[in-house]
Length: 147
Length: 147
DNA sequence: TGGAAAATATTGAATATTCAACAATTGAAG
DNA sequence: CTTCAATTGTTGAATATTCAATATTTTCCA
Image (cartoon, rainbow over all chains, first blue to last red; front, side, top):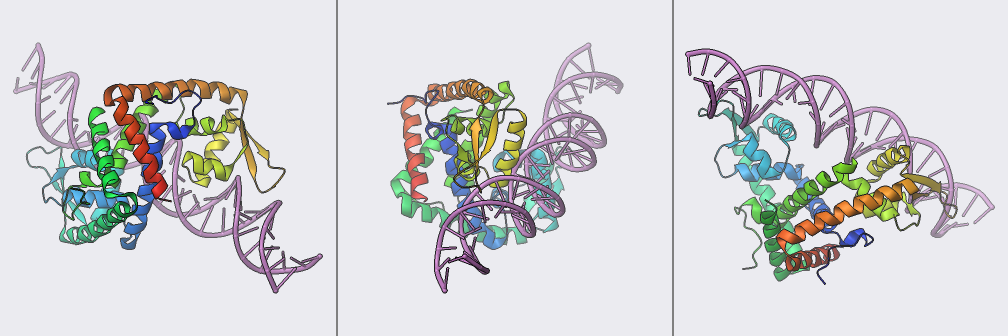
């Protein structure tokens, strides 16, 4: 046991592949749920992070929502057009822009959270409570060990 | 214990987010390794799958390498230009195209596999043998339970 | 059999992402 | 202080991905 894959082992034995596969599948399911609100997964992330009510700089936000800076800038542009979020220049450091959720954004965020939670409940149902928590724990520690 | 996230829990408690985060990080690391050969992760997957020497239809291959059909078609176009793979019309079913690796592709595949294996060894070093295997097991069963 | 429906792969237009360059502001060193 | 480097965010061009439409072949069934 415990061997890393050999040169000739199938791709399905690689951790990188299994992660990509699982992520793709779970993300696809979540995307389907969120499509009820016509919103991509990334916008749910953005709204959720901003829902703490604090201002978040673009850099901070990009890290938190797993997007590159230019991609985030453009997605935020759309969300500003939709009046879900707004920009405020940081008075402490005028290079920075602080992002906030609007009331409309908060309301949408609530509905999206329900959909996301219900997806996870659905996963727990078929995958099991214990496995889900164990998997989360292992993913967290993998991420920790990678920094 | 064992609760799915509440409406107001941080995004970092969602399985979907943890998977995306872990996948992003591991994929980024692998990408850096493979950049030594100037090849994106998806091409490693394609070459690896085709390296069993059998012909694989585009549909089959798209599933295996986690790409949509049109994206795969265009990536294969590039790989054909680079003489890494080639197309043969399936004689049994002329709607299908069978993909094969060239010798050049095989040689590249070997080098890429080394890089991928060494990445996974590196993960095992810092993350641990036991955790790695347990994580793989859980990911496999998550994927199973999602079909 | 004949013809409609399904399966397979590709294409082109629309959309999204990324890379490199830029502008603005701050920090820091002389 | 002043200038130069680093940080932050945006932009535009280049690239990649996706969606819808198409072409081809096979399957099904009436």
